[in-house]
Length: 459
View 1: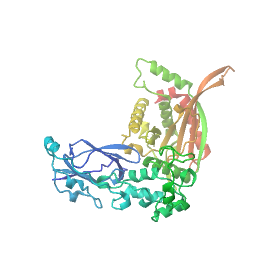
View 2: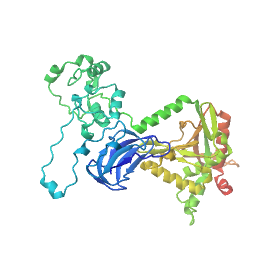
View 3: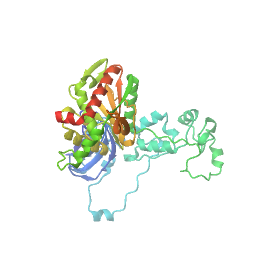
View 4: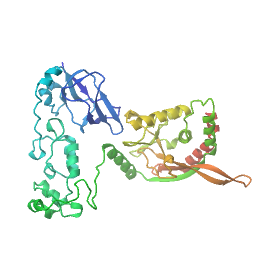
């Protein structure tokens, strides 16, 4: 009996996942626990493991498709079994499954002539189906298939996927708006355009005979023309980030207060911890960990900063859920340390580092990327002194942490001494928090940082 493997529910807040890569093909044998696909949410990348064993009978989604969670993505069973009842509504099961023959001995396969390659499906013929994401990409660019050079689908049974149309679009010459409308109406494209950087203008359309007679240029096709503009469409995760940042800036009255705190004592404490024979699980602690711990203590004293604002309602949270910005290969991620006030400094430091590592590898549970009530963004390691962080909506504020600067200070007796100061930038939603409450929060945070050892002793 054939069995379906479903798109896993990658977190309670995830409704659909992007199927980025298949690790299997129709006709292959799979075992329980074998990785069969790579999927992405808007925040993480996940490997899908097989929950059944047998022959892959059909794949119900193409690479690049957005698939609802808990819907069937493939069928596994004995070769030749019927799987039609497992196909999701509207999905076209892979016809190759019907063509797949039972596994034969290697010697028998070697004796058989190789099967003739399947004919490629040309987009110009209009016979190749488009994946939903390919169709969406064409709509976003204002194109039709006729406006692109003839292409062959790389999906199952020649299906045209987003990667196919994107590659064709990137390699095709740029068209002016009028030329694009003519191409969409079915008019053929010339070999070259007369516009800037080779752009095809409306006057170039229909001049194939003239351009065909032109001598070939000596410039290699791969070399960019002078003044050429290379367009790079946003990735899935970048679109999510862009949308959220735009929403944040367009829906809030954001302003930033800047301050600095003396971390000379904090740096001395860190050195003593590292030099201690009994580091008390704090051997890997850094200044960023200490500042985040100080933020948690400050939020306990200023609960008005720990919450959300939406629909004209302020929602203050008793639990302090600290989000911390991480730079990852896939873009900005904000893991969330839930119930941070219940953790010791050592526990907090270890948890933050483990979560940052998982986020960097794309393996962090999506549930740990949601629910923050306050966020910290630390760019000190990049040499940034101060900056204006953008609030992670619907939170009320975000703290930017810059690098440590050495400065001359006049002591109590008039002597000059050099001390280390860390730079702090607090961005708040002025619709909820005025300047004075924000300044008081920074005062408290500064006092905690400058007396950090006493705060740790007091718990």
